[in-house]
Length: 278
Length: 331
Image (tube, rainbow over all chains, first blue to last red; front, top):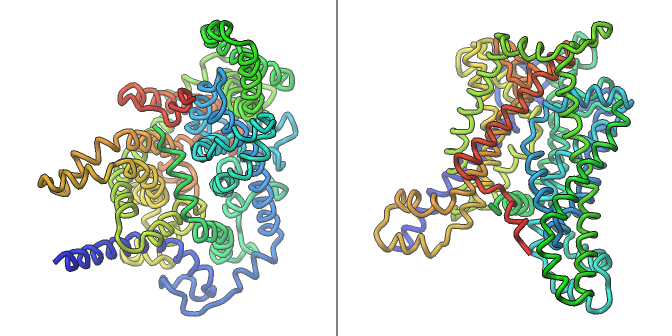
């Protein structure tokens, strides 16, 4: 009897699984399908392409507009991620390990920033960056990205840092290492998986941004792909840009799919461990 | 002007932090003075290192948020249109009167509030279901979790384009189900599609936060309840929900404030047409399209205040333990 109920339970859970997977994948498959359709069949309303083509991909990689935007997206997201993770790791180490006044204030401030409406910063940053000459430059986008990624980085990293066996640090200090050396030599290597997970989450955040990208850029010099997508007009003005937009959309979705496929467990643990301690 | 103000502002913030620290540390210092001197020296070094490690992060966060928000308060008190820079002048609260008596503002405010409430409620229900599936499923747990992460990770603009083409007459598989009508040209159906896109994209995040709460429910407690004859529904409401309450409140708070910022989906799906603008959309249009820094900043400040009020009400009403607030007490 027990066997029977588990089989039935398994089937029931299996069905629920299928619903979730279908619901999650349909919009992604749809845009991928559109990107492979020929111009003639693009508007046939069928879910799967009847004729397959790679022309849309050829088109976008031939245009400077998309290639520049892709370079901007990758460069800006990578630099912002690197800086945010380094600064976040320093702060998270202090928060999870050291006793110092002002700690609560820092945690509170970063929580506030996590909830901050980004649009409130768009107008002042637009004006400030214009005055400082940062408007439409890489640093002009990297700076706000770091700021909004830092709370995420600090929370996730402090959660990870709490799980590290800190006795090793004590042992290192007993052997004569200073606090700083203990951090660099002993703890940093142990913290590498947590750092990596945080880097993925921060990268996804920067990769995703649209509001800052369209507000603080005006040319191909620093426009990222999400922003460029909304300005896409196709190879020539008379061409329907749908296929090109879909192909570009698929290209910037690929890294996300790869992250999710390879690091599902890390991403889930990063998101859940950082959020719950409440 | 801004060049000078920047370092000064940072110094003030740092001073305040230091002063607050000194105040809190007085009893501790007194206690330590009685013990051995080297310990106190150690403590002081630890404190210095703590400040040193936190300083860069704190500095960046304060410089890029606190200073600009104050600056936008200043901008909001001026008539400042970049198309007519000569007419720049201090006008007090005139911009606030203009915005708060403007019908477009209140329409956008209503739209934003509606989207926030409807999506968050639906996401809470669906997210709970998804969290239960991800946490308890007997088969294919990895597959479900991987699939659920895709909406979370995907670029919002990409997903929005997918929904837009799906509902475009002729092109879209969904539009054709409804005999080729054009739902994105009507207000009610546009809003419904915007909400659908929001829910699809953010339910997994809600579910992940809730799943973290589910993991805290002791398995023994569920078994005990089951032995005592509790039904599945009773186990859910009487055992799981109370334990999960903090996680639920955190998830609600985060999602509510995030939903209130809705922008990307509206921009791509309707561009704010047919009165579907959110407040973020309206502020963006006034600023970047209209180049009206005064009005744009006024809206920025009002949105900031609204979000602050929502957060305050949440914390007061539900006594939400701020996530990570126990970090401070941790030794």
